[in-house]
Length: 290
Image 1 (cartoon, helix red, strand yellow):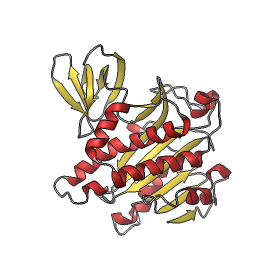
Image 2 (cartoon, one colour):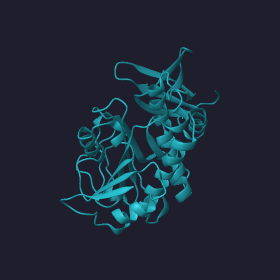
Image 3 (cartoon, one colour):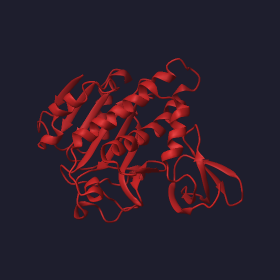
Image 4 (cartoon, helix red, strand yellow):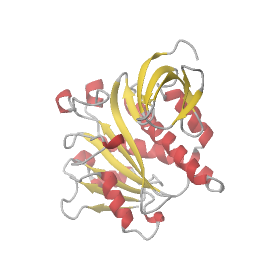
């Protein structure tokens, strides 16, 4: 593993998110191969995309971890801004291009399987890591929000890097030490933080280490069927009555579960089954039966 300081701003100011501490914490995580830490950046995923544009092959992107103390142009799904005050949230992106271990001997449609797998294991890793560290009962709201009760704790954005067809930027933003006055008010889902939920201050480097270790486990030892089973256990959308806005279509029905393709299976009011990969989902209530 190698680590790098940003030439202009040096290591991040917050000692709990210091490059040396990050490198030491992730020394045994095989999935992380290079670390770049910034005090301020437009977006960790945008920086990773620019980095990929300079690489000769997608292999150079794999395992590149980009961490920032502050983002000036962070974003989530549908280009929604991701806002967090300096030094309070965990903001990072990880480049992935090599296949997970269980896919290495599979040729047919391996790329699409990898995309499905990523959509499952990234939120799983965040939920597992934060639960382990905080004992909070957090869950996934399909497709990419990590929530506690009805409040958003973390967001995930997985994007293909245009320079290569088989490389991805996995962006994660976790609200850690913000108080209520530091959270955005006008969001599609009310926000919260670990500090608000527990009354404690949390070390972001420790949380980063736990998330990366869980990702590393899923990459080296997990498989698709296990990921599907685990996601169905932690996804709170499953079993609820939902309304899904696809932009050109509005669907209502019961969320039946997560498929092996990473889709939310919804039984519509007419009784048909639909597999949905995206869309704005409103959870209306708990379904009485499945």
